[in-house]
Length: 142
Image (cartoon, rainbow, N blue to C red; front, side, top):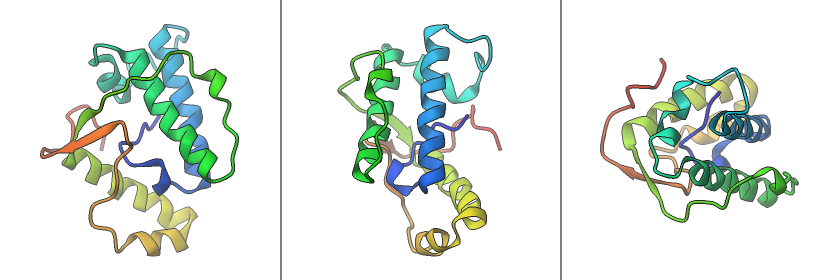
């Protein structure tokens, strides 16, 4: 499971579709409707929020908007809560760690995008997040 801090516009098609599926799975985990993934570290920041369901709803909404911008139809009825309207702090170190991780993936499956992204020093964040100084999160693997 990877719930990117990066803006979904940075993802290739395969990554965007995977993100939608994984965020829907995260929503189910947060609702207590799964037996698996219950301790997945990617869910820590959602669980730490006072309104975890609203936070995951806002996250899913951001992914859906990007999908619509590309002409895809992701089913918004699968988002079960009203979205959180604020922004959540995320560290620049986490964002850059994820950027490096994404570049490795794109280098293998979407080389043209990989080449284009080599010029980006600081990628955009998902609109849910406000980037602040700091290191990679301790819950992050790798």
